Structures are given as C-alpha cells and as structure tokens.
Amino acid sequence: MTDTIGATSTDDQAGGVDLILRPLSPAIGVEIKGLDLRAPLNSTVVAAVRSAWYRHCVIVLRDQSLTEEEQARFGEYLGNLYTSHSSHYQNRLRRHPATLFISNVREDGKLIGTLPDGEVHFHSDMAFSANPPVATMLYGLEIPSRGGNTKFANMYAAYEALPQAMKSRLESLSALNIYDPYDAAGAAATRLSSVSPDAPSHVHPIVRAHPATGRKSLFVNRLMTHRIEGLSPGESDELLNYLFAHQEQEKFIYEHVWRVGDLVLWDNRSTLHARTDFSAHERRLLRRMTILTETVG
Image (cartoon, rainbow, N blue to C red; front, side, top):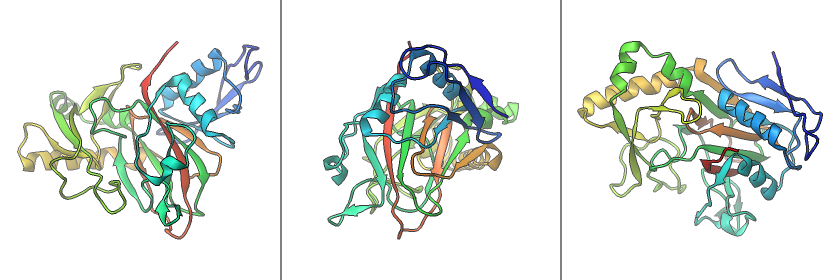
C-alpha cells in the first residue's frame, strides 16, 4: 500500500509533483518517492517530509546524487547540524563541517572514516550525552556486495508492546549510558565488558516522551546502556537483558539493504539502529550528518 503526500506550491522544486510514500516494513520506515534533493524544497514539501519522518521514524530517498552541501541543505530544513570535531584523517577530505565518514577505506595507510569494520550493536546515537541529537542522516557512496545493512528498531512499538506492569515499573527508572571509544578501531561498535571511568556518560530516563509526537518510547540500548540507577547489579542486568531482548525482536525491525545513492534519515528519539557484518575486503563508504536540534516553521 502507498500513500500520496501533496506538493502543490509552484515555487522551488515540487510544484505539481505528488510524493509517494511506500512503507518499508510493517514495523518502521517509509520510502519517499518523487524528490530530487539536488534542488531546493518548498515549505509544503518540507512539512510533508517532516510529517512522514514523525510518523514512520525512518525515511529513505533512493537514487540521489548529492554533494555534501546538498545533503547538508536537506538536513537544515529539519534542524541544526552538528559540527564534527573528529580527529580522523577524514577531516582533510570533507568539504562541509557537518560531514563524518563511516568507512573502512584507507588512504596512505590511514582510515578516512570511523566504525570501519564488522557489526555494530543496537544503539541510539550519542545516548551518552546530555542532549542526544534528534536525527542522523546517512548517504551511500560505496556499498559492499553483501552485508553492512542497517537495522532499525521502532522504540514506540517496543514500549507499547510491554505489559502494563512493566511500563509502570519503568516509569520511575533511569539508566546510565556510556561510550568508550578506546578500542582498536577508534570507536566502540560492540558492547564492552568494561569501560574507562573517564568515558563520556549520562543518565537518562528509560521511558521518554517524544517532544513533537508525545508518544512514549524506550531509551535503552545494548551498546551504551550499562546499568539502571538504584538497582543492584544483578537486578539491573536482569532487567536490561529483558529489555534488550524485547526491543530487538524482529517484529519491531526494518533491515535496510543499502544501494549507492540512498539517503536515509532516522529519528534518534524513537529508534535504535545496528549494522550487520560485511567483508573487510570490500569497500564501504557512507557520509553521515547529524541533526543536533530540531527547528520547525
């Protein structure tokens, strides 16, 4: 089943063009057809895109051919971009300060990006910070022949499927989220058995309400959530393991198989994402930009 969202204004790009929404799975995600992001978008289209993003949590636009500046312009329709201060070699290669490369490609023996190889456990970006970003965009530049897929899990649906007794228990609980980047690749991709006491961390409520939709979602994740405040280690581990297993059920998940030219935007407040393994002998290069805070109107 597809829906149509209108784009009736005659200014900028989308005058008279209908944007088609194609659901990507029963759980989460929608493909928006009919937009070429190389051209500016009018306010009517931006509002329709925002509505689809709120409703479906993940939006996909395929067959794009975007410069860094064009990708950044699309992100800026929705909010304020995060400026990357990465010390990686990639800083020399980027043209826009919001760009961060996700890649296993090496030049002159140095990685041009971060998170180079293998799987990445489910997580919410920068959950270890006081104010996690509202959204993340990835754009596919080079894609391996198989693997390296991105899984998205719907945390609205995961919360809503919990028994009422569990919802009531979680309402008063908060959890510590930690990021320890000191592995060999320079970025944590799988859950670490121990973390540095100096690692960035922050405590967040386990249940959060989305500021725009008002819907509640789970805000814990296997990669970064290390303990529940106020519980014994045994109680904390037991409850977290229950929540991790619950939220990672296939019924909540869409798995995105990348193609060159895919632009994927997800709501960091209502989703988790993970990466599947892929061959270290094939190149993988995606361009990431992060929307730190949202702007409306």
